[in-house]
Image (cartoon, rainbow, N blue to C red; front, side, top):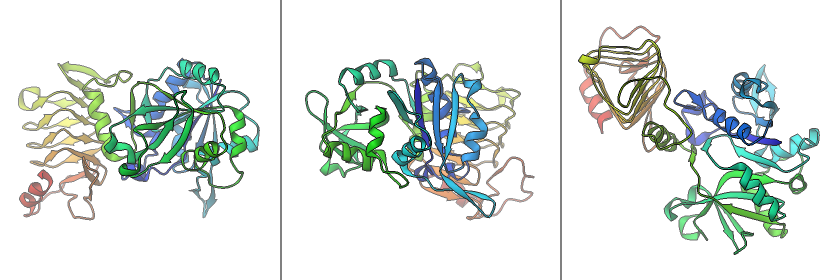
Length: 385
């Protein structure tokens, strides 16, 4: 059985993480989100997976390679070119990427599934495909219902009583949305749907293909299912995803490491004097991380591997990526630290290097600063807000 994972997007709404990490490799407690998708596909008998890549394509291909260690076969369709010796991504859109693969060679020769590479799901794919076939559909969207104030972030689907799609709105304003049933980025297609996609041009599944199917009165359906769906469309979504995993709300994601105290998990060789720090779970601390005496860690919090948390630092309800050094006395509440960036839970970003704050948040592989600036207290107050 064949499937496609959409992995060519730049992930602009998840910057700064996607400056160096493609969305499918964004880690959920050290495991890339796309790896969970491959596990789900394998469980339901999908063993041939096509992945379109563009932005940071090398990273995706280097991690997953031919898929052998994940129990599937993987091939890649690169969208872009080489310029001055560097790969330059030129994504064709989700539908355009699908057409490019089929034009190269008719890979999709039976019912297949398409998944966005940036969401955690636990959908019964087998049951969804059976429903799709029972309707004689050429295309089926798996949908969920969301609160009305969230519809502008998604494609909105309007159906009749039989589930046939009558209208499709791509990220409409709240006041213009015709329903609260939204597109989850999980699609079941017949090969004939590719005939609706033009060759060699940018073409999107939600914005271009779906309205065309509605206009053509094609057998186009939506299947509404209640299932776990953790979308990582924006930085705040990622922050909430990590919180949900740590709190045990995501069924198919286990907290890695060893549980040293109730709700406190660590990787290998963590250096910490538990009697001289204050830790309140749920917390995950990655391997080879050092927590100095006097630090405070309050969950839900993830601290990645090879970090250094200095004495008196407080990390509260935050996500800290690998190789982060947090200076003595710093107080981070509701923050995400990624390299040189500090992001709040609403997505507002501070470039700590450009703002001359890299004495406060640095790379743990660098030598620590010998002298801290006099403005330290003022900066700490700013970060505390």
